Length: 284
Image (cartoon, rainbow, N blue to C red; front, side):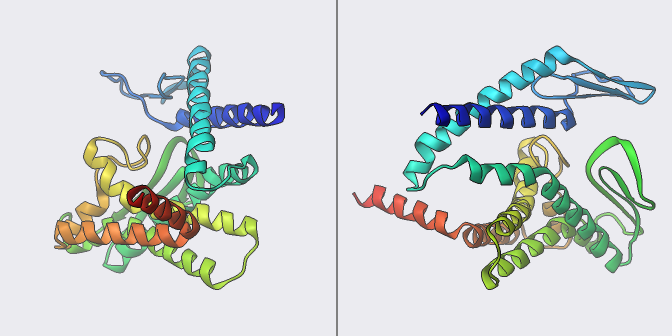
């Protein structure tokens, strides 16, 4: 029991610290901003960048943010372990959680590259010209370089008329490409026999592709970013579909069907357990 309690505390603390540090990439601007100065950290600002000076760190706010996220993580893990896992008829193992956490950021950036690459490919395919691409702190095009200004993902394509079907395809192309990548990964998982760690890595990578389209359609419409705190604040795929003349109901239906289909392929055992549990609740 002491070992299990230690694992719970260690797991929650590790996850909380990781999330707290990750919020250093999340913009958290005051009501009236100062040009050239950006604030990062959530819920409290603990990193302040200045185009004309060094980056400042507010350690007291960082400690408070860390305490907040550690508490949230401990509560979430407790709910997952004590309530969600038993309800689904499965067990919770911290070892199975460690690898996905370690792969979360690097594979997220990989799929982020796939998204921006999709904008570039579809944009140039319909007559545009790629002018810029950046992932995190790395400028990929027009030349490889590091920059102190963080961008989750950015791709510039010139030569397309805003509002045209070609521009719409370029906008939709980012999330469409991540969805295609997720379907290809699902086929690889179904048709090949891979090691457990490789399967976990592919599933984490595919998960970003599953959520990319649905999150980008949903969250910006309720005032959040593409990835809640990060990313664009406009429903880019939806705007692109409208420019291409696709009716909203048809587009929403495609998004729902694609998301549900991918979720079932990636997490078939879990989906079946959840479905059986729901049937039991309604039948008895």
